[in-house]
Length: 185
Image (cartoon, rainbow, N blue to C red; front, side, top):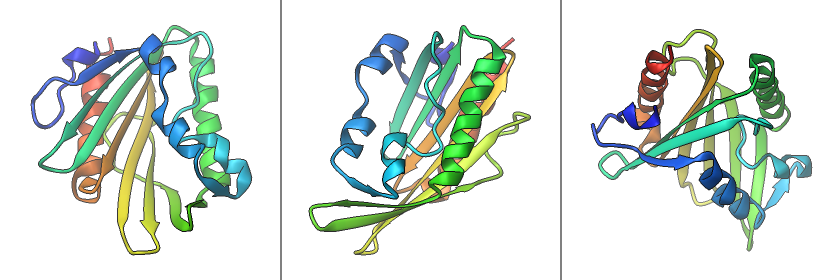
């Protein structure tokens, strides 16, 4: 089903299976290099992302758009009851509230990360969305938009991140969310 979803560029998404997703987590590897304050937020890996759901099956697709400097992803998770999917979303909401503002430091450099709830990503009822703004001491900044919704027993998770995400990230993520939801019958 993920292969049927098309990003704004009209190209095919690069896809990955649940086994491939479980085998490599570059964000977790990157986060392990940082000192995170508050310290209890270090294990969150990506703030606002859905928590792994035990026993579920997932498939993902991604695209890097060089023109807009935005990377978009969509992940579909199913194979467990809706209550398990909802618990994952509830954990995401709690973690985003607990760690809404963080500082990441490494080798004398630091970055401020602020995550807030965000409205306007897609049109799927019950969508939970966030915007994470990252800024460095030197003034460099980048945004990530994330959204999650459960439709007919499938957890849809989308992200858009990169230098161009402030301009087009919410729309790009929303388009993936709406396409995925339309395919779920």
